[in-house]
Every structure is written in structure tokens, then in C-alpha cells.
Length: 67
Image (cartoon, rainbow, N blue to C red; front, side):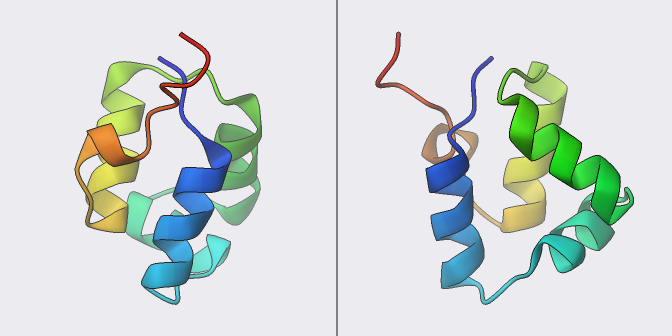
């Protein structure tokens, strides 16, 4: 599953959330969160956890432009 870094960044900006705060809410280190965000391809579970940590629906962070 491909997530959009731009959409994740937009959701973080809306919530005034840093990568560190997202990592804490998600339950991983900031370094691991950066790895997750930079790899773009994630499992459905990971996408769901990211969406939950951001307080958005998973469809809001999925990259639909490159399908």
C-alpha cells in the first residue's frame, strides 16, 4: 500500500504535529517514523496505524495518483 508523504505532512500540519509527536502517538522512535515516512510502501496495518495516530481516515493518506 502506498502512502502519500504530502498528505501525511498536510494532516500533521493541520494538527500542528511534529514527526516526533507522530512517532510517539504511533509508538515508535522518531528515526523509525522517518523510515516509515520515507519508504512510502507500507503494510495496510501500518497505514491504518498512521491514520489513527493522525486522527484521519486511512483514505486521506493513501496515494491515489500513481495507481
